[in-house]
Amino acid sequence: MSQLENLMSTPITVDKKSKVADVIKIMLDKKIGRVLVTENEKITSIVTEKDLGLFLLKDKSDRTTQQIPLSELTKSVLTISQLTGIQKCAKKMFENSIGSLGVMSQDKGIVGIITKTDLVRDFEKNHQNEKIVGEYMSANYYWVYWDDILSKVVSKMSENRISRLIVKNNEDVPIGIITFRDLFNLVMSMGSQRDTIFPKSFESEQGLGKTLQADEVMRNEIITVSYYDDLAKACQLLLSNKINGVGVLSNKGNLIGILSKTDIIKAISTLS
Image 1 (cartoon, helix red, strand yellow):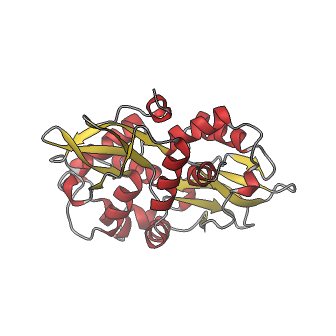
Image 2 (cartoon, helix red, strand yellow; image 1 turned 90 degrees about the horizontal axis):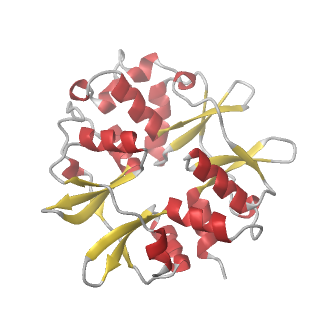
């Protein structure tokens, strides 16, 4: 059995005729960041949490999530042979800025999916004490203040095509984080799927965007690692907490960057 066959998982799928609300529910219920899309029972495309969030924030129609066809935002699935090595798999993900690849069998088509999480799990298990966090962290990160209204938060996410923001207090100390998943949870909890107009709820004077502040939506805890920590240890934190990124602290305890699964994929792609 190849390395990828050991790591890959059976994809969670949804029919292309589904609505956006159906996909949001699946992602929230199963705590996943992507769903493969089928047409006539064959996998043909993919929808990710990030693509879903960016699409909804830019959609200016009066449609609810129950009315928007999933087909409007699906993308083609990039694939890789099940015989491909892990390093080449990571390199393809990193170069294409994607979080997953369909795993192809010569005679069966797409038989599984390999994600950034799968590769991070492999790195955590097999590459302890080889790399440090500071070699691969991203020094630049996006943030907002605790009292910024939610419409400013979502605008910043949309304009910069990012799926997470750090929240700071008035002393510029990070106190929380907001992700697309937090926004999905918020909107779905405020009313039935049929009644929720996702972008409008953040833009109108009476909507969520003008009545809530960042600190009312954020998750209060920022999980952190230190600059000189073992990269495999950081992987373990990401996996055990089911998160996509951690803050990186200097020796003085200041937040100096973010380490995401994408950064770890970059590290895997450069392994000798």
